[in-house]
Length: 311
View: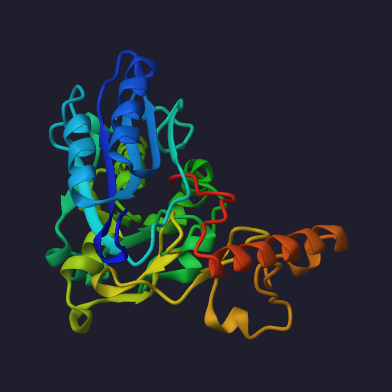
């Protein structure tokens, strides 16, 4: 059994050309099951994306399998640690895209310029740099870089239309664009998209917010708040330490300490974002599930419920 202090969480992705992602699924699923890991891995003709957790040696075995896939030797990989297993089960899925934008681009050849975390602050401090947070609205609400533009999108597929509609206003007086996301994958696509739209100087944070929080000391950081992550930790802070946010079971939105002080918050039942959207029957069902979870926890058992999909 994995002890809590030995649970490693590995976020990974790689844009690659898979001729038959379905043929890759079963061997990868078998390797992951044999290693006893949990989490979600997405395969598509454009590559692989996912977050998995387990014992370090077990993760290394699965990561070695992934690196052996066509074009995946240079896998983008970020590790952190969790006090408890952050996933209920293992899922390996084949999708049309490993991160859905809905616009055909080629990050392998057209992505923007990588910017190391140590160089990021200077880039975004330049008044001629337009800084865009490419994540969804609920993620930005948890934390973002000071001065970044929030597109207020509900999903990444909304990003192209948002940029096209706001382009002239956004680029006025700007020489370059710098974009960021959780782990870097959305920026690979969004920078390729902007270049396809004719924007020449496009940059993105190498390794995403997670690498920035890992490498840049808190005293030098321009990050404000926490970073939402797609697992049961909900959010992390500097040094990738566990954050203070919880997750609302009803709507799957992050819940801050301020939200939890609201009369609309009921643990396991509702939060300010969804309190008026659930029927009495639904709320009763959530309350009963939460009660069962607490009983299972008291017995030292896991109560399996809904899980996260990868970003």
